[in-house]
Image 1 (cartoon, helix red, strand yellow):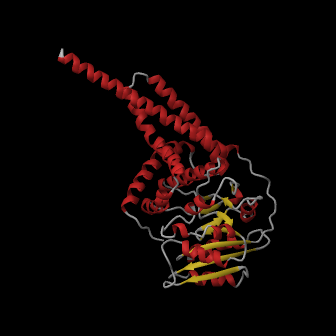
Image 2 (tube, rainbow, N blue to C red):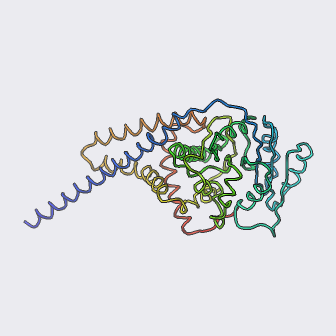
Image 3 (cartoon, rainbow, N blue to C red):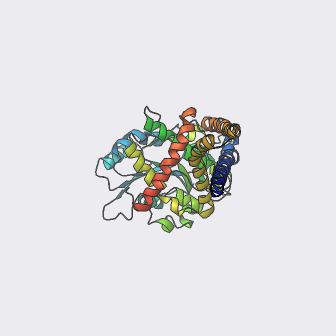
Amino acid sequence: MQKVSVRFLILRGMLIFESIIFYLYLACTLSIVFFLLYFVRRINKYKELPLEKSTVPVSVIVCAHNEALNLKKNLPFILEQDYAVYEVIVVNDRSTDATRDVVLNFMKQYSNLKLVDISEEEKKGLGKKYPLSRGIALAKNEHLLLTDADCRSQSKHWMSYMMSGFAPGKEIVLGFGKYEKRNGGVNKLVQFDTFFVAIQYFSFALSGLPYMGVGRNIAYKKSLFEKQGGFKSHEDVASGDDDLFVMRAATKENTSVMMHVDAHTISVGKENFEQYWFQKTRHLSTGKWYKGKLLFHLSVISTSFLAFPLLLWLNLLLNNMVLVVLAVWLLKLILHYYIFKAALLKLVSGVNLILSLMFCNILMVLNQAVAYRNLIIKKDKW
């Protein structure tokens, strides 16, 4: 009698476990489907307005720390924009290479180029918040356009498209900064990572929940920056000049997105995994300061993509309803494929669509590893 009872309890426990992993599998699937249909699909449906020539004066700000080679290659893309009135401010942040000399040489040819030097004694805090604040303080125009020294514009109309995002009432324009497509597995992962981050912040902004942009390509008004007290609320955090600032300053009403291919900037991605890992740890170090509702949404999305393949295999091994499990997987796969395909075309990204199905899982594992790393190591370098 006791043996029957033990066997019954074991069978009952197995049935409960099977039910739990099946319902968790369904929950993950529903979460991913919701993300694809409610958020990402907004990117696919979004229609850019025709380009209208903007005449508002613009201040482009570039922070540079030992960026002589990049400035030599990329500054001409900014200085030769098809735009009426603009200035370019390069903030030389304690460079020990030829950064200053490169900018001075360009200044002989371009009268709208300015140089701001920051000495070792003057520098405050980590990261580029202080250099960026200095550049913004010296900007003479209300409309600011920010990019990095290792970025080049996609076209001569980059500035025009980004400024066209300042429709009445808009104070922030979120752009797309992608990476150059090259050979190698790390580059493919970087390409997908950049694309996945972009579809999140673009789709959340289109849903009325703007929370970040990228410093490689973002525009906002100087008066908004001053009204927010600059970076004062998070000046002790090395990163966050783009996401933490946007999260605090952006609203549904004052934020627009600009996804047109001519509004993109292009950078050279990290060449090896060690460099990519360091970049990710810096980018994700601000996550702990995200707002509760936003953090919940992003955590659910990340956890669902991370747990989905594990729960799929557990259900295939343990669950008797194999056809149901496969049908759910097929539904998710079809939606993932077609919605990501449309988003890739919209952003003109170089991501391989088939590989993106695999990279989703790899990226979520990396994000979790970085999150644990950032709990242990508190500071990151510029």
